[in-house]
Amino acid sequence: MTSIASSDAGNLTVEPLSERNVSRIPLILPHERVFPIQIGSELFKLSGASLSSDAPSYFSQYFVCQLESAKERNDESNSAIRTLYIDRDPAIFRDISLHLQGYHVQPRDGEHFVRLFSDAQFYSCWSPPSCSPDSELTFRETVPKLISQLYEESIFISIGHREFQIPREIFNDPGNSPNYFSLGFAAFFSRPDDLFPGLDREGLIRPPSILPPSVPKRSADTFAELLHFLRGYPIRIRDEAHRQDLLSDARYFHFKGLEQRLIPHSLSYNQATRRDEIVLRLENIQKSGVSVFISNTDPLTGFVQYARPYVDEKPAELVLEIGGETTKLHFSGSNARAEFFRDTKARVAKLFELVSSKLNFHQAIKTELLTNNGQLTNLGNALLKEDLVRIVLEPESAIILDGKDYLEDFISAAASDSSANEYPRKRKRADGDSGDEEWVVTTGQWRLRIQNAPNGRGVECILVAAKLDAMRSQLSRNMSRSFLGS
Image (cartoon, rainbow, N blue to C red; front, side, top):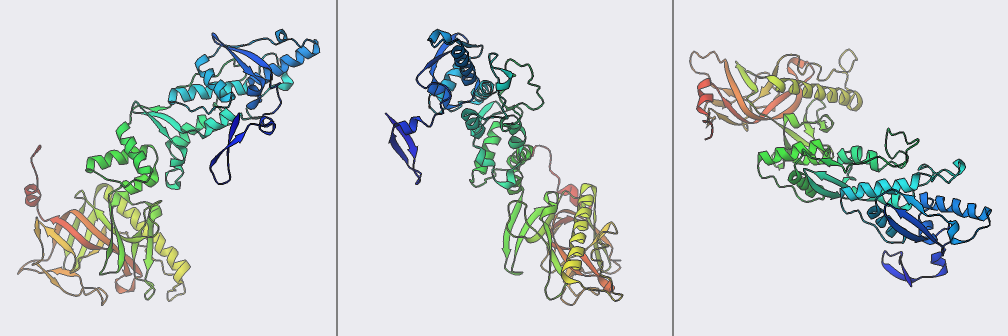
């Protein structure tokens, strides 16, 4: 006979069965003796070696007590050992007996897993009635090998009425853990010290009934795609509806890292500025990803940058996309400001407050720049005091107005209140034009620039237009409408 062992190099080697191998099984019961166990309507006969191989357990404790009782009576016959009767499923015990005989037992599906788990812990935890209270076993005292193996097994769960077997290591990525499975599934199947949380086991004669874990109201196809992505395969989005399905379930299962990979974004390198850029929608901005870059040459100039949490190793300059017709631009003379509506207004306010706190921290810790009276400059203190945010239209700003490229009505000129290196675009006024005008921005992409505020009032954060799709009138909006179903 032979046994299989693993060498240091990781290769399997065949090792002859010897006394040294046999002795690895503890001598709890006589190895050569056979002990009868009846599970339900089926009788099993297992050797002492098999029962001792994963002990202490219900079986080993029962037969140890039987042997001690027979020894006290000086009765060494086989009839002195009574058959152990247990009213459980013999099909499940057949797998457990294979484990005791040295075979590897692999759960087949979720139902098989919970039944195997339930009976394995039952045979390990509950002490037989013939044992004295002093010898009573509890799960805190020992975790038998089968239970330990099941703790390391794949997660079996039904999603949308389809069975999934998920390796636990697939969730080891810090960005995707803790998640639905580690917080939910693990509550019942990963706590050796508390198998059934909240259950009083005093006086129980059998374990409680357990249903296989299931999430019937989520899509099996979508979950299969999420698992495919979690295994490291590239993400391919078919359309916006497909993206929203993936995002919805990624958030449901708490895959934060995967969610950041799924949100709409664009990463590129800008040759003109020699900086990496990331385009993100306002609603997808996370607080932990925002940072501020301050120029080494001028501590009061810089820009806002962003790194997707759990995904990006280094930040890139943020290009913020704001859509939904929630932005209105007000032009008055040489001034241009943006007004925001609905949820966008609150989101922009929170973003500017965050930028303000980053600026103040950078000012206090990094630059230690002092004002005339010896106090630290209060950077970003009034970034959003008013409802309107200052904007700049540069010569490089791409603008579509009323469905057409908008170039001819603008001239390049230096703003009277801007620094020498700024060249904003200003509207050309017609005769009798007061210069006041309003645009509704359907979708806009903006850079967030940190610069000196006018009249030496500290610093400010302004929006610099990268690309705008805007309209001036209700007529333009109506012209852009489409009929339902078209």
